[in-house]
Length: 375
Length: 223
Image (cartoon, rainbow over all chains, first blue to last red; front, side):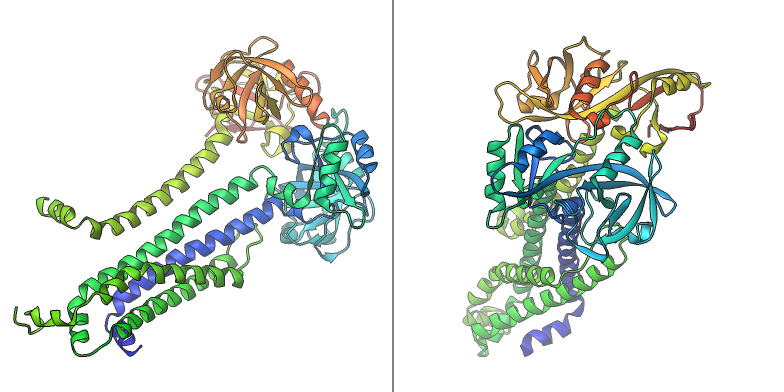
């Protein structure tokens, strides 16, 4: 420990630069994961945090709620399936909404009040009790979607009064509103008077007590023609785009982890090669191999720990100042897991340097002229 | 140079790790760049394909193609704006395409259009379509009859076009009437008034400036 600390003190710049590089790489990994999680949350949160545990899509919609339309006849057929406690229409579309003096793209979910499809993460206010009332995604409260405010859907000028706020309720990464299905249908008609009919996008289903959502989804798909029913977890993960986002971020993450391991391993290997003569001399005067390996490991742990702490600080600063409109937050669990992963990788990558230390032959000190040997 | 190469040849393993790290960093950057390009190109091909330099959306649509409605009357008014040389209509419907011999449907953006553009020839006959070449990955070939949407509207692919995708879906270019039918059959809430499109494409007269046009619609120059 003393040896490693003494060396860190002596070569502050060298270790400072490595710590800085590690901090930036760990920050990249942490920020990337935080962003991916926030992006996915804002992309699918609205669908994930509603009360229907089974969603029945049009079989041709390829599990996309935007592309799906089901008839009211289909809703009745789903209600009749054994194991269904409650089922109702859920509509979803993007509208232009004027809120806080600005026009914004806004996702609107329409559902039967007190039925499947209502938001489950209400943090303030109440659920809509009548037509013309809405619950908004809480992250957008300061954009004109706060409780008591009235927003207007254009064209059509349909007013909606915000009566509640729900957490993690954004959908398609935009402000999201939950209203009654009748309000949703009226908004759609007002925005496009030529619309022949306003059909629900999906059927929201609540299973009877003791019935598993996945099993019920299978039964609905089998019993109702032209429908593909999914439990909400599957529906959320199969929402078009969600898989690609997850996969793309995973590739970047794996590459970033490998780079951290290589940079750390390479640095300590070069350092060991550079100080081979000193290490040989230390071995010759009685320093044991475990002592030298221990010193190396302590240095790796200290550099990585400092890097992780700096990266966490950078993450906190960046997320607090992010004006992305996403619900971005620092997760201590993420820092702990990523930090542990990076540390284990760095220690593993330092095995090449450890191997060099282990292979040092103390007698070689006598063959080095620079070390006072007789070569 | 000779010394550098000799050292590299004598100690290849020493340089391997550093080379590996640098390669991975480059791969990381390339993956990010490729991802961005793929997303952008797959979403905007249909817009970039247009030879018109001004796009007119309805004012409440926030320049969203599926939310925009340009009525026949508005299109006539746009055509009458001084400096307008030519206008034509464009509309889209995002539907599944069923390809013979394939169990998995393909994601397609079916465009109804009135005039040829940079990438797509003049509208084909009813029942025919030009398809983006990227749909070949889904089993589409020249002469294949694909079925579009819930109503399984059949169209036969008579030619390939390049880089015309929209919203990460393969572009399929058909007669306006076919597109209107597909829109009405699959999305009755998006059905448009007779003669309406979602977008008016405007070619200005040479030398005229591109500015915002009529109330009720919003003009955007390509950029």
